[in-house]
Length: 114
Length: 110
Image (cartoon, rainbow over all chains, first blue to last red; front, side, top):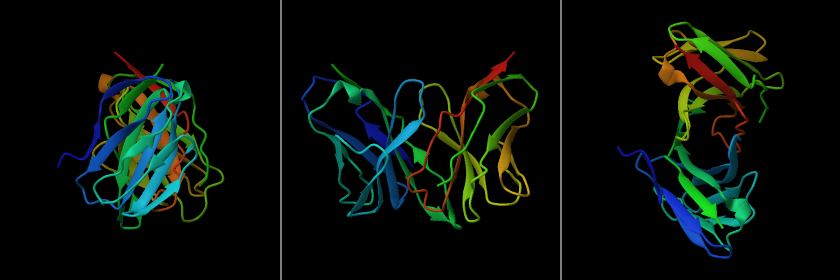
């Protein structure tokens, strides 16, 4: 099992550009999440999905979009990148097992917007 | 989901037990307590979780008070590789809208 994979590892964007951060998991998890982490801070939930075709907003969804066409993939789209979106982005997945869950995280994508 | 309060940082000597406290006084009856850690700039790593009873696995032990308003994560023999930020989270099964606070920065010293 590769677990949760994210691409790219690093990216520099110019203001106003757009890009898609890729996330995939091979654990057949129903739940997937996107977080961002600013320097020295905790993680903030951007969007989450409870299954293919179902997504919902987290704490900080503005400036981002997601889709979930398959169980395995959960891409995050940035439209019109802004310097405030400079952050490390983590994707995670989980399943419900015995009434509880554990989230498994990818290695992160480090994004700089200049 | 209930919020948690953790100390900003803690030190521990290598080989000694590290006891990391967490306050979650507004936890509801069906919310679990989860612990994760984040080493340097890697993705967070799940450690352990519990509902009411104390739990132990190969990484750590989790002690939850009887009123469930606080808990302690115990790393029985801390090593230098345990230096990390430790996050205490409470949430319902399914984990929607999980709130990761600033966590506790644990420094294990030789």
